[in-house]
Image 1 (tube, rainbow, N blue to C red):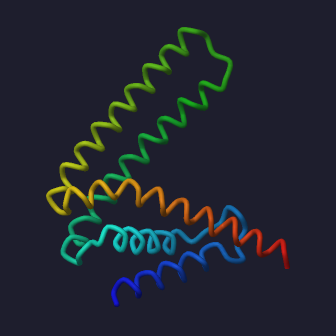
Image 2: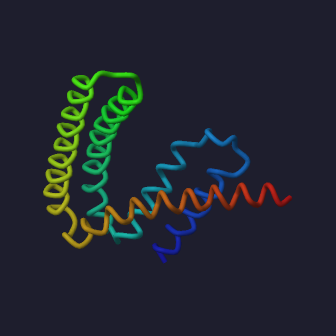
Length: 149
């Protein structure tokens, strides 16, 4: 019953998320609620696990977002006219950020496997990717249905 409720919540939240909105505008709260429901259902988090898991997950994703912003900054600089020495520095900075991301992933995995099982932890990366794919699919389908009307 809980799984059915979560799936219904996810589908209604996600479908209204993209319906009749400009392409770039979305409701961050609804998106986050849909992500929580999707992940919780897919890796079968118990309420006790979820209570401990989500603060760790949110903290990790915040940290990861910071690293990704740094990486985007480097990528923007790489698109400009730069010298070979500047390019070498950017390459080194990119590797340093990638190492930080890897260390962060290792630390996060170690922390969450104290809360959830290793199998659940392993499933997590696929679940995040699946959620993103589902959002893209729903957005594409919504665009198609609007164009066909």
